[in-house]
View 1 (cartoon, rainbow, N blue to C red):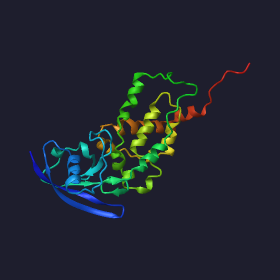
View 2: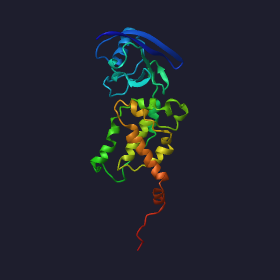
View 3: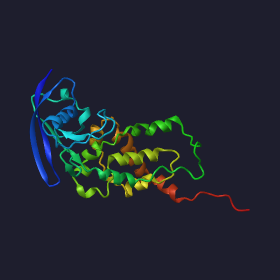
View 4: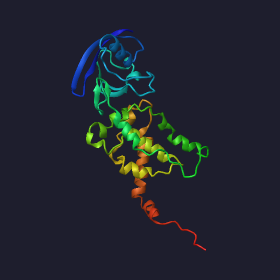
Length: 253
């Protein structure tokens, strides 16, 4: 089925901008990115849009479609009302560079702040040993394509610019949770999560989980378990007591 749709695309840069309307023909089976690239080819050659794989695996074409953070290449036109305009805007949580392209360097800064995997001293390559259940605990989080939709929709980042210095966001708190679950990692991830990366700012509304294109259960499987481990260490009286009782050592002979 072929029909004509109205596209309302935000055009502008850091100094400001507004919506421009376009009429474009839609063909069966097309996704929003198909239409945006056709607009770029036929009607708006100066339209700035970021994309790469067109297969939902690079995370480049993140934007907001009718107010919801999505991947342009994974949003089918058949899923949108044909009798209503399709409104496309850049990710709201990050500064606009031009049109639909935003500056997502905030995420790269947060990634560099997280210490990398640190195995026990003296453990050489090829000597790592893990049970399959330990692998499976964090394997889900490896599906992340770093589209930053979860970062964009998290209201702690989206609605409060002042929180960005102290809050890593769901994508990188999930990374911390993944490393904290690793049985061979020796870094104190829990203290860092709370005191450095702002885990306490997260109030588990699950908005990050709802927009994840890989269907990672960010809140249920990463953030809540990490919060529970942090709370156990800080408030559980038995854990508190155990941390203050020194281990018995054999007397010197």
